Length: 533
Image (cartoon, rainbow, N blue to C red):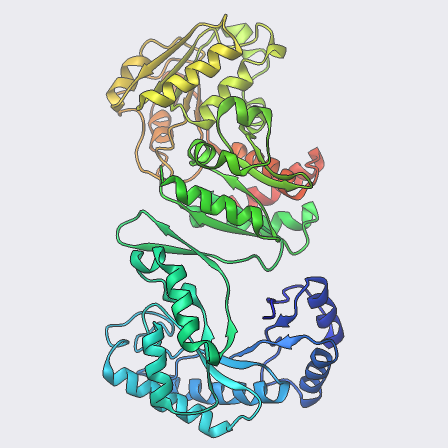
């Protein structure tokens, strides 16, 4: 068996392509050109691969040969024929395509996909492609799909028998046929059964991973081996985050080369196994370099702390992880929020604020961000320039007790109160007792991944106070409540944008082992503000 993958870095010609593949340790690489390449270019890549014993694993022929649109169907068949010709010339192991779909999405589900009529259409289309080319050295192969034939060993065997062409081979992608919890938990048995029954015809495989989420209805996500340096964003709705647009802009500033970012969405308070699967994947995948964790900081720590080779002091003290990185001594877990929250607060809290005004800190929420804010403000180096009282509220008892333990450990002399507030009205009542010139923080997550606010519209903010909404996206209801009375109550309002920038740059610095100088951060902030509008 040869292992390999895509060469996604820049190269100029066949020799540089081979050199890049060898540097990555690949012995098999998908074809880097299509049928429109000159004959001389095709020969050059074929000769280079043969000379260096690199297998050209596949030529993609991606299209929809069974589309209901006749023009689309004909174009897909013609393209597959030309790609199969290329596979023959370049000596690829297979030319691979899916069978297609009867729907508008060429690779998507449709009610007619798994019917006898569609089965017959697949047979006809595959024969038309193979018979037009009559390959001798390569094979045409079908990638399995969860909602189209072939979707199992049984349907693959039936197609092979019905198509009846010796140059039809098997492309094996086990993840693509995991389409139910039963198959997810029996995947080893399914893989062994498939290889036992069709192993003699397998010419090419795709290797990746998959995670089953506790969402209704069944929700499965792929975890594919990274093909280039990759950082992950472990959250709830990562696709909505500005970081997906910002990271490519930041990468040149930080000298990150061809590094990319990918999101991994996990539901709030997920099964511990899901966190462990993600951490194990990052730990063992060569080009997966680390991750930023949000929302799941505490849950991930408790579920997977034993998988880390080292934890930083903040992570152990606070029982949370916001950053995953790799070093020579293994997988490292960090709690970066005490640093990033401090940088963010320094940007908007006036110097000597606490000493001059004797204000209080009122935090709604007892998760990682709340712990980080408390820990920064209570550092011994601040002396008496700290809140005169700390008040924390939370909907659940266990996390409230945990933040109480940490606060009393950090500064036993500080006045601190911890209130269980299952309803927004409960927070309103606590807020009534907060002094003027205080800092009011929404650290609940409400207003971002989940709509709403920890307060009701009747809440009364203390005068001359700082109001910090840790979110920068979502419905931001808490911030809007403060804005509605901003002039009346003389409030200064800050959202989570600068906190977001510091949070990401600090984790990126750890993951990629780069320095965030003041000049670099200023450049990143300018780029980011232009995107934010």
